[in-house]
Image (cartoon, rainbow, N blue to C red):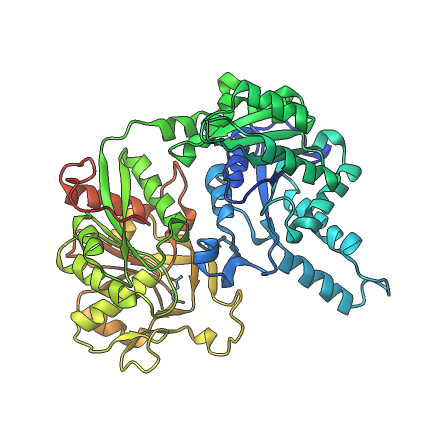
Length: 556
Ligand code: GLN
């Protein structure tokens, strides 16, 4: 996929910014729309990056409950960020840094620290200009060196928290050439009872934007179906944009098809024209087509795998879902994820576990659901069902082995059971003194040495791998010998930290202290996930088309 060297665009001309705001309601998928547009600009040869603005007061997403905000995504530099950054990394195939997630917490913290340091020389510190200046600085710094920077403002126009950001964007239009900026507004176009597409919510949302001095250049209408020509014309008229600046973004079955829809609508072409990039773009017929080929490739059947977690919400495990999907794209099958609630093993959930041809146990914090995870791991280990354990899933595999193979009664992680007689998982020594919860775990990319001749070595095809981490506890080295004597192999290590475990006698039993899901991309699936899927396909014998249809499917 194109990165540096392909683009003929001269970055010294200045960065181009695409500002994306949302109207009517949140959760419209404006991040996916923005990321898809970015993918197409990258296919046309431009170096594209993104900034996600989260107007909440949290400094980062690290302390947030996944039930409220979905998964906490981890960047290579250890930034704990909004899951939208994961979408940008996957769609654009870039690695971003913590600076690409701007939050109100970060901005205010900086401004207040500057004030305490006396940097404002006695002035009254105000939202305009001090807060807005800091917002603009952050956006410009993140964009530096790239051709195009997509800046997505989280939330909905009209939210109190979002105001300083919209004001900062307004100031951009006075400080930068018109040709360098494009304002895209994504709204909902609902249907009336008689099936008519309604534009009034869009009109109101644009009115709100204009009242704060922002006139959108492009409108994207999210709806079940494509917008009717009449609907587009009406939106153009009432929102004061040309007819050709209104685009449809209908529902699609797979988010990876959104770039295809955006391309058919011609949004990418329009964006390039408006930003003065069209002449430097790679001609349409010569553009990178890898994405389209990958996501429209024929699939040969479907396999069921169980995800044993505690948040019955797909967004809480989005990168795992995506990584399984990437492995599926690579092997030409659809991966169907069956939800198993580790905290409440109802008969439906037990049936899902038994129906699945593989078991994934994800990361997590706190005791809730851990016993269910240990039971699911035991089931996979004893029945030769392929197993992939990620972070807490890895730790619980160690606990399960200690209890059921080594016979260490009451073995546990010190996180769940501080008084356990066998703390096989214990707090990292460097964490003893840590008091703050935010940003203090072992975070981000760290290297793992891989033992030749192991499954992990075969998967990665290398003596080491660099994957992203997010944990406070790890395998207690005091028990290492006992585990190894009992047949558990730690095939990946970093000093005396255990990073990968495997069971040689099992068809596929692999756990990682790190989170390989964060580096998985369409077209570049994560090795532990591909290995897992291969084992699942083998376990399944033939690929089925989704089981025998008995029993209620429980999905997250
Ligand atoms: N709670 C565990 C720890 O802190 C696992 C973390 C995780 O799964 N991300 O080490």
